[in-house]
Length: 430
Ligand code: GDP
Ligand code: MG
Image 1 (tube, rainbow, N blue to C red):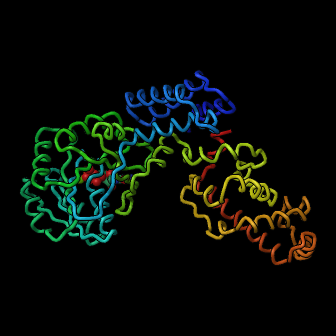
Image 2 (cartoon, rainbow, N blue to C red; image 1 turned 90 degrees about the vertical axis):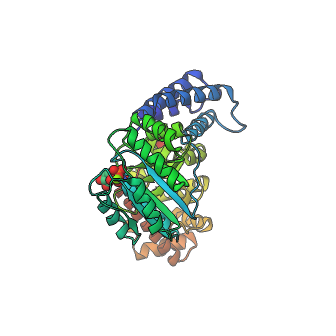
Image 3 (cartoon, protein in one colour; image 1 turned 60 degrees about the vertical axis):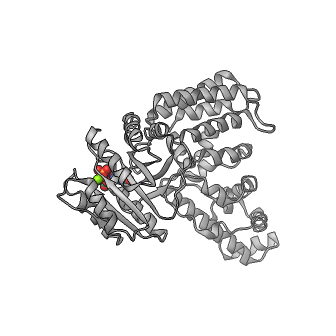
């Protein structure tokens, strides 16, 4: 995690005028984090310049704190770095896959076939990789899992011929995806071949597949392919690994395109449409920067709401009381929870269904509880339920409902922690 970045953000807190030194420090830490994530030096420098200039020149909009203002600029400049938003049309099209060997082209071809199939389109796939032995089998295996027809001619060395035949063979396909050969390095005949394939297929899209772990070489590869066939989208694979994928941003810059999909696993289902917010969060090693920005200011004022204690293991009725208080400021629980990096944990839906009226009732009931009961709800027996309900002017059923709500919350938080979730907001903003 960008500790420095967090500290730098901290230093902006409470400032009422832009402090040049604080901005410079933030930019320096931002640079470090981005470079560590393999973002190209020149891109980092451009971003830094823009952040600095805008932070110092632009007036914070009315009612916006200095910190919000600067972070907002950081966020906007990061979004710029992600390139254009690429729309994926759900209609007839031909997609030509480009990229070096091992980048994940064949796997992604299978994933894309699955993606379009799920959208109700007839898909066909052609293996034009005449370089790698077993290329056809690999693709056919992937496609057979989902019943997508896969054309190939193992042993034949003329990729253009294969694709010509494949187009004829798969004429019923609405979406045609062509997997091509990759080499370990860019060679002239590889480039010539992909140009020929592009001319032959009149491809609707030419997508470049980049391994998230690819660092500075991404720029050169992208430039070469772009010059040859005009790349109009980038796919970043292996996002399930430790690499942040920052190198692929140079491919985006080089081709003037955007990121279409990301791949996050070896199975055919592990493909996601690109989401700039989560990519940025990952790049910086922070929770959802944008949403947190929007909520953080108000919540900061609430000293009592100790999210960290809640996440560490202690979650008493008293914690829940504080939480109910804070939720009024933070907005619906569902919204707040959706901003957290959940690590796959599922929060039961009924946790979210509690209305604010009900929450108010719960608070009144909790006011009738003793300290002991609030700290250690397990002591609340049947007779205590009676006493509490009398004191609060509620019926026992309501008290039991509150206790059930508490248990559900507790379970959800446990599950959240178990899944390795982290509540980054406080750590980042405090
Ligand atoms: P190609 O040479 O470009 O066709 O690359 P392949 O599709 O054969 O992929 C190379 C290796 O990377 C294979 O072992 C794939 O299973 C693996 N791979 C591809 N995409 C991903 C991904 O998103 N995550 C992970 N973990 N592995 C991937
Ligand atoms: Mg391949």
